[in-house]
Amino acid sequence: MNVDNNLERKENKLRKTQYLPLVIIAMITTITMASLPVKASPYVNFFINQPDGYIHGVDPVGEYIYRDVGSGNTGTVGAGDKRLTPVGSFANFSTVVGTDADVGKALVTFKGTTPFEKHTENINVDGYFQYGEYIYQDKGTGNSGTVGIGDVRLTAVGSYNAGSTVVATDTDIGPTLVTFKGTTAGYYEKHRDNIEGAEVGTTPTGYYDFAKVFVDVYVDCDLIDGDPSGMVGWNIIVQVDPDVLVPYGWKGATTTPEATGYFLAEFVVRWGLAPAAAGLAGAAKTDTLEISEQISPTPEIGAGNQTIPDEYTDPAAKLVTLIFISKSETDYSSLDMLFYDKVIGGDPFKPGQDGISDDYMTPDGFFHPATVYDGDYNMPPTPEFPLGIGLLMAIAPAIPIIYLWRKRPKKKVA
Image (tube, rainbow, N blue to C red; front, side, top):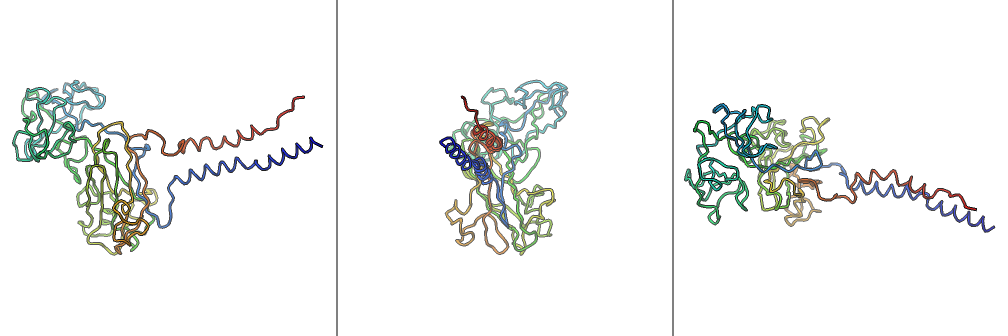
């Protein structure tokens, strides 16, 4: 009798726990799904495009500088030329050989007119550029020949970031600036044009550019294109670690040729609106970019999913490009897209009702919250989801197997 009672108790216990593996799998699935984008209807999602899971660190060298000496002033990289900065895996002051990957790349003369591009002589006072010497745009008071108020740093100078403007209290005022060699036979100092955009919102060629990080923000939506429910404006705040990234600027649906491919610019073209309809406004602070864009004059219809080049193959369209200056190739910073309304003191649960903008605007002048998904500059030091979503999904099928194996009937030892 006791044996029967024991067996019955074991069977009851087994019945109570036989669904435990399913419960565990359900919990993991629920947590995993909760961390993935959820699309309500209508939905508007803003997200950072990072095809490898994060934005890669950027080589801080800037545009590559050469001494065009191999076969005279050829205007292209060739055998015998000297690299005056590191170029990828090629060291500073290495000599180009015919099989090197940079052979044939176009070389551009430094500006000898406004804005004059010059360098200091802090490494070697010989009139030639040496890697580590600082480069400036000598534009504050014209072609003064010294670092002065209004000049622009084209390389980092001590604690001053590349792209910053010299002000009266700065400590780098005064050093002599030297013109890059543009006429001395055998010593033509030139640079590649390997970095986009000498100035925010434009892509002119021929200027020397410092290194930048370009971060594309995309919009994915099911708004109806050409309808009063469509988008005619938006607001975004993006916050970063100022010890890793320095907010610099942005590019979007402006009237410049580079506007092609941006969400609101494509809408303007699609519906034949005035070419000056879309423009950017915003501010770059120490650790944030505050950006807004609105079609003006505001049409009675807005942009939707058909504005995307091919709504059947492209699930999203480029909304804006954020521009940062990197202080590190490897250090991590989150690219934290924040609720605009909440950051500036409004109520995120009352979109458009408290006089403070939220995330996207419809032709009626009201703002509506969008769902925002953050990004990463360089690989995060630890998984953002406990154990990592991939790991949990990988081990989930093994849980019931392990459980059933542990609960298998065991042979009694006589």
